[in-house]
Amino acid sequence: MKSSRRFALLSVFKKEGISDFAKILVKNGYTIISTGGTYDQLKKDGVSVTPIDEITGNPRDSFDSRMKSISFKIESGILFDRKNPKHVSEAKEMGIPQIDVVVCNLYPFEEKPGIENIDVGGPTMIRAAAKNYENVIVVVDPSDYGKVTSALESGKVSVKLRKELAAKAFYRLSLYDAQIGQFLNKEHFPEEITIPLRKTKDLRYGENPHQGGSLYMMPKTSSPLASLNHLWGRELSGTNTGDIFTGIETVRQFKESAACVVKHLSPCGIALGKNAREALNRAIEADPVSAFGGVVIVNETLDLEAAKIIAKFRNERAGNIDVIAVPKIKKNALELLKKVRKSMGVYVFGNIPNRRSESYDLRWFAGAALLQDYDDYSEQSFKDWKVVTKSKPTKKQLELMEFGFKAVKAVRSNAVLVVDKDVPMTRGIGSGQTSRIGATKIALEQAGKYCQGGILMSDSFFPFDDSVKEAAKYNIGAILEQGGSVNDSASIDAANKAGIPMVFAKRRAFRH
Image (cartoon, rainbow, N blue to C red; front, side, top):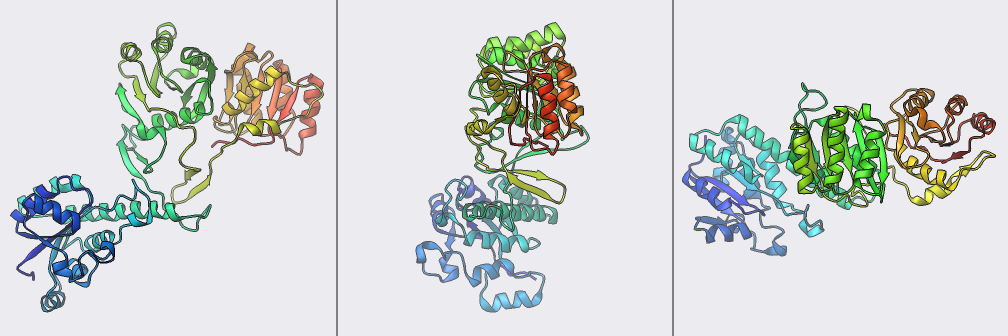
């Protein structure tokens, strides 16, 4: 049972395409109701339209238009069940308009956070229409005007499409409300939280080719991933995306020219240099075996000389780089990279902001999540370090330790690495191990001859003296570890016996 007259309610902030869509609705037998600025736009474009206050009876512009769409007649017209004879009879008796289409997008809280940009009437209409999707078409995204037009002109709007539009409506409301909640929240860890995320890119696949994957971003995030622009070569997989993020988080710590090669979400080579070319050359040389198939990140513009390092790796070592992501790239550098490997992905992401817009990290555990403070630190924390051995590190060793601390906190735990004795670059990295001695042995073995006088870095304390004794066998020049183990004295004694200066950072740097 249906009334003879059907209405479409249009109330949008973003008005692109709304007049053309309104004309389609009129063509398909709908009477248009509209509010404020949308009404003015439709009238200007020659659409026959009824102002909403003629339906609601609300005084026009009352309370600065806060009540323009909120009314019994409007919400009833959206919500009543067309298949229920009682509802249809009541609607007719009370003069309730049958609103079968609701087109609404919201005040731009995302662009201009503030109390006056918290939309109330819009979400109310959207929620009502989405709940009653079997009877009402709800459109919250202008990109859906086309598919709704096609459905109307075919003579049938399917339940599948109605449900799809309703789901999008509820997700859109959730995204909107989550941003308002974050704006108003003053608690460090609130009792309830919703993380607003918007899909920005469909990925080639997730971690494996049989897994689909998409990238989602928080609105207004400062993350360079939000500006990631594909210039050449392969599209990203989920693992590629994670590797780029890991690399950015690594190199963003340095004011100097920095480069990082990442494999499986953990750096395999980190280095500084006087320019991008030198830093990149060192990062690859840190572990050229692991660099094969890696993702390269640099914290400054990639010029032709730096691009030649990638070409050299390919030509001299048959080494493939899968993805390169940099803030900017010179045109001649890009042209060279295109010739190096056709399938190598080249991306730019713009400048890396000094500070992240998000002060927390999120770890997803399938049905549960860990929300934690971002593991930030200041240069001041280096002054809290404590020399615990009779032998003292040199000024040069302390400078390399500062580089090494930033490097080891970027590596997946358990993490132990060896820093070159002369320049800020890694020579061996033991990452993702279940034992500290296991990570130590991997780092030392990988560094080989470069252990002589090098710096051994650990992301946590040594629970036993075995790692120190192992380092002594390789003639390590100095050690930095967290300290704080019940067996600290054993490690200190082993370092003193070997004549190795050891420093306690007094800070753990786990990354999982």
